[in-house]
Amino acid sequence: MSEAQNNTKSYVDLSNNLSMEELLGGASASSSFAEGSIVTGKIVEKRQDGALVDIGYKAEGFIASTEFRNWEEVKNGDELDVFLEAIENESNMPEISLSKANFIRSWEKITSEYGEGSVINGLMKHRVKGGIIIDLNGVEAFLPGSQIDIGPVKNMDEFIGKEYELKILKINQERKNIVVSRRALLEESRKDRRSALLKEMEVGQLRNGTVKNITDFGAFIDLGGVDGLLHITDMSWGRISHPSEMLELSQEIEVMVLDIDFDKERVSLGLKQKSQNPWDEVETKYAIGSVVKGRIVNIMPYGAFVEIEQGVEGLIHVSEMSWTKRVTKAGDVVSVGEEVEAVVLDIDKEGKKISLGLRQKTRNPWEVLAEKYPAGSRIKGKVRNMTSYGAFVEIENDIDGMIHVSDMSWTRKINNPNEVLKVGDEVDAVILDIDPQQQRISLGLKQTEDDPWSEIENLYKIGDVVKGKVTKITAFGAFIELSRKIDGLVHISQISKDHVEKVKDKLNLNQEIEARVIKIDKDERRIGLSIKALEEGYTEDDLKAAGEEVSAALKPGMDLVDMGKVLDSALDGLDIEEEK
Image 1 (cartoon, rainbow, N blue to C red):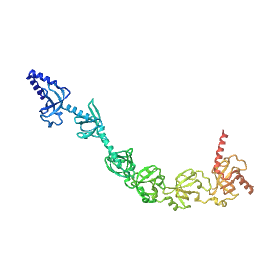
Image 2: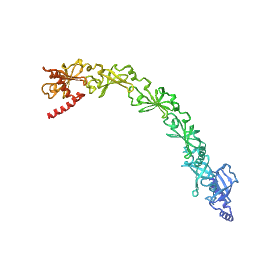
Image 3: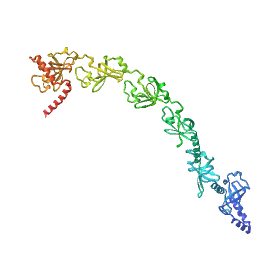
Image 4: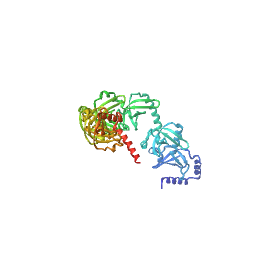
């Protein structure tokens, strides 16, 4: 049988021994007690699990030990206020509660002495969903998790069992609950400290702080009540990709105050400003033309950035990476982290730019070639590339010279270099000009031989009978290759005494013929030939007249080959129409 049952039995036994008058007297006494009120009682017996309390009623009430704050200190004879929940329970004992009496007393005291916005001390009791239950001298209050601290709280258990000052946010009389905040007091205190701290600060001042937060654009530094922004651009004179490369959370650092906005309470901080700007002495440390060592820290399509010292970078443009190769991507020549030596080409102190050259470490090979091969020198090389206007011939060290079509033949009009050369041919050529600045070398193919037209008077005279091979047939005549690769023209009017409708009706390609020289025009580099002038009876006057006839047919400066192409095309068109 439990102790409570024993207590009940003892009270029942006691009542059985009472007289009717005593019972009526007890009933009368019970009417003086009001359920739901607070009454005073005295501890008459302290037991292991609780205490019997005499409230002046016919039977004592029982209070469990768990309702006492300091159970070990409780002793017989102690007086205390209890809450009378029921005059008699099922065991005919008064139902009393110490905790409820304490709550009511505490609630009345707190609500009378403290209102919303008041500050009160509270003990962190235990965690619940969304926050912590607080003991306010017998009254439980709720502290939301968002109101525990200024920043997010990762572990609320760290606060349990500790006492703090709290601000009352809300009191609900009907529900008998209170909501409190620790954060509100911290923010108020911080605001006061912030105002005082801002008044102490000055631009240029050095302050100690703690790294509070790190972002992509910088770090927020707690200066003891004021957060300042240390932007990534103010962390180092050198290049950094992210603030975390220099800082870590909770790190203690010394920073310089760069700017203060008192209205918005914002502070801008600097770390690099604690040391001298390396660009201040860059012109004296790195003279133009000097060689510097550095590390490739970044590569862009147009060039590579070299860190010469912390905070000082130079750019090697792709055009300054090689004398001979056309570099389109800097990454084809250098790589990030590579140590290089370069020559200082230019310094823009205001713009914080240094132009560097990689190729300048060696002498300009174009200048070397200009000294090695003065104009008129002969070289041998291989044709590496062809364009419509010339051929590129390798001289040495990947340097090419160009033979323009106009420098391929003394005697012929070359329209495309493939008429004379092809890729892979080994050729002899003459250096005509070397321009180191423009990196151009002009070569001549025809200059390897003497210009036959310079001595044309000694080679041919009016009236000479010559032999040659038909190399081209046009609408207006046929070109005959003579000695020294000189071409002569047999005009259609000089093929036969009879009328000739088409040149190809009388002459064929590669046909060997004889003709007589009727015209020599050194300025136009033309030799007029006549087949019909081979016939007997042609006098000097006849030869002269024939030459003038050909000159009249061909305008001065006219390109015979190009004109022949036009006429040939027109003639071919006529042939097609005739066939139709």
